[in-house]
Image (cartoon, rainbow, N blue to C red; front, side):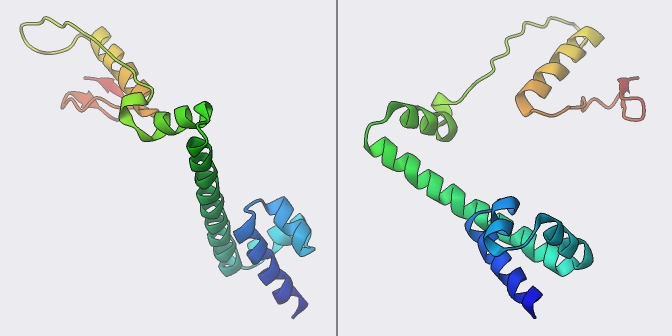
Length: 142
């Protein structure tokens, strides 16, 4: 039952500090043992993932509390940080202006590429045109 007590202590540590190395050290368990337990016991792996998620939430709450305290102390970097990530007026923006004149309303391949790249920049992931002429198997317009 020593292992069970060590596992429980390790899970408690992960909820407080969601860093495997530190939690293992505080619980007196090697990283190799922790990862072996995860491999051998899917339930333990699931519970430890949940403990890490809980720990991350705890740290996020604590960090946000500290930022708010700094804002109350009129700390400009904290104020700027908060506004940048919590107020749309102060968020980073990408503006795209275009003047497209075509009689049929369809984009040229060059224009499609520009729009695709702009959408990628905005979303942070690759976008595919929603054009019905788009062939997903080749990832190119028909």
